[in-house]
Image (tube, rainbow, N blue to C red):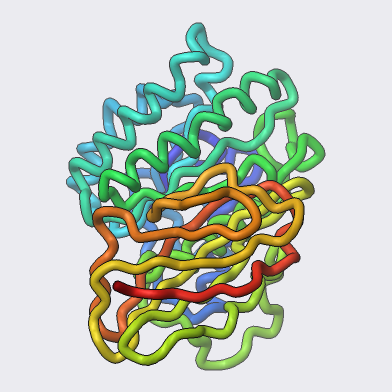
Length: 322
């Protein structure tokens, strides 16, 4: 369920980011069904359904979201909302309204994977946008630490005002960048996408990510314990977002700790689905209260946003289990 305002609808480019995102699903061999009460977009968008309501605020989405969730029962939700709150009388209250909206979504659809994006830049009031976006990571982290299926998507840094058609809505290039960020975020959370994942024939024009994900590091640790794989899912001039996949060996894992040494200049600013000791240099991340048990051969993930160069891969990545 693409969920939000006119940026999700695609006011300047009917279909918006959903066009390129759909094409990436097709090229990746995924079978996905967009759902929602609205529909628009060109023929190149294979499924026109969405919940992008032009001009709507967080509170307006909140007032209607339970009904939509009951009607369409989405497995995965892409939420980009708050832009219209930046023009309103109470932009400072937008983070609290977003937190309430997330609570209502996760209460009604507790098994759904909810991806919450920072909102893209605005030409009129960038400082207000940055103030709002700066509070979203802590909101998402608090929900994830409470066991909710909520994931942060760093969208703001993927676009600049040069990617906007009218100072608010992206042009085609800006929407393509948004699609790449959504796609990488979805692929970083196992089970968030539909069936498939391996193209039956190679795409003639494979999707080009904004930044190429860092290949997973070689797993370490004996069978029956756990291994850890690392990849960068998004990066920008001054920082990056990374995901670490913890995989159990031939026996179940009940509690895990991942250790790694971040490269010089890398500092974690926000981490979810785990509890970290240290934010730079040699760090460790242990499981949260809700994801320590991993079935034999199963996986769980944690992620983080950090300052620094995402191209420098941490060293000494390894996983241990009590």
